[in-house]
Image (cartoon, rainbow, N blue to C red; front, top):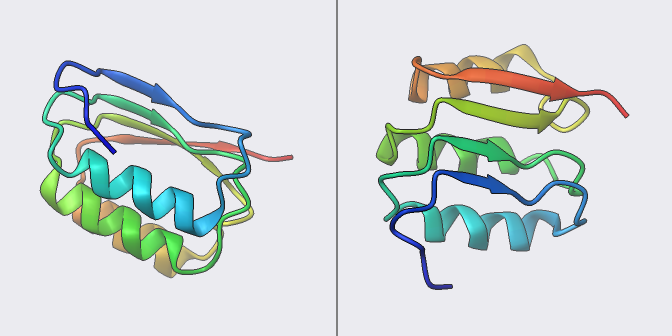
Amino acid sequence: MDVNKSLEFLDVSNNQIGSVGFTAVLEALMSNNTLMRLNIALNNLKDRSPKVLCELLKVNKMIQSITLDAHTFKSNKQLKEIEKANNKFILNFILK
């Protein structure tokens, strides 16, 4: 996947991309240093998705806001890992 180097907002919500698609999107974003907002809610993600998100946040420090599906990212342990990876952003949750 090619990455747009000037991308500031990416909304892939409600696309049911699953964990494989989610991983592909986040790996592509590893080299993006302009993305500030990311919406990944409602995509049928699995338990390993928070770990992949943490890896992105360790590399990409520009992200300020992430919208997540609360059912996927529900455990406090997962959220604490995400917060440790980058503490300068706002997590938004969608409950559906």
